[in-house]
Length: 210
Ligand SMILES: *[C@@H]1O[C@H](CO)[C@@H](O)[C@H](O)[C@H]1NC(C)=O
Ligand SMILES: *[C@@H]1O[C@H](CO)[C@@H](O)[C@H](O)[C@H]1NC(C)=O
Ligand SMILES: *[C@@H]1O[C@H](CO)[C@@H](O)[C@H](O)[C@H]1NC(C)=O
Ligand SMILES: *[C@@H]1O[C@H](CO)[C@@H](O)[C@H](O)[C@H]1NC(C)=O
Image (cartoon, rainbow, N blue to C red):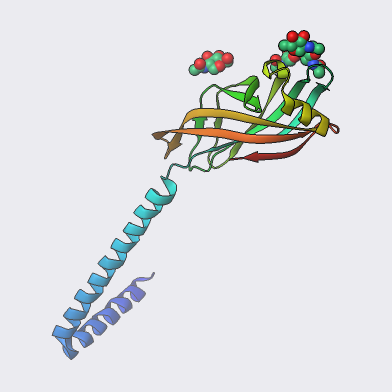
């Protein structure tokens, strides 16, 4: 801005002020006071909005989701003569989905598999981290066997002959969500999934998680 322009502006402002004040000095003072109050109100509202946004949205600790994404069978053998039984080696893809505005670090854990409420196998889950608003995916390989299922379990017999096996997986992760790089909040997440296996095709037909 040149000096000339600046002077021009100053004189313009001066004129405007003078005109206002000379027209009605009391009213214009009142007007300025009102304007000021409006600015204060707007600024306060803006600050409240920012605080609410941070406390309700950014700083909110969301429970990460721990799920079975998919499963493949490296080995799947069933027998339905004599005592019904199965031996399965399953490669399971798991995901820890973290919707927080900061990473979720979880500790070593275990995933347990059940058939009809009876334990059939488990796998180790090594500690890890799901980043800022993202999912951490990994695989575990587990051997599942019906050794502990009652030898004369009628349900197993029926399921094996019908060609559908319903397995459940349960696990719990303990960990911490880190917000704004410093604030750490403890957060646990539980898995409870139902995996429906088609025995003839050796495929997973359905996975449902709560
Ligand atoms: C599964 O393995 C057990 C031994 O671990 C064996 O007794 C059983 O016959 C096997 N069943 C099948 C269907 O392979
Ligand atoms: C079935 O299981 C029972 C009890 O575990 C056992 O005594 C029996 O020998 C088994 N039968 C066969 C055919 O494996
Ligand atoms: C988690 O498991 C790994 C691998 O077994 C082990 O080296 C590590 O010490 C474990 N961490 C804790 C905190 O137990
Ligand atoms: C599963 O069983 C097979 C054969 O018994 C064994 O070689 C493998 O190490 C086992 N895998 C796991 C993850 O336990």
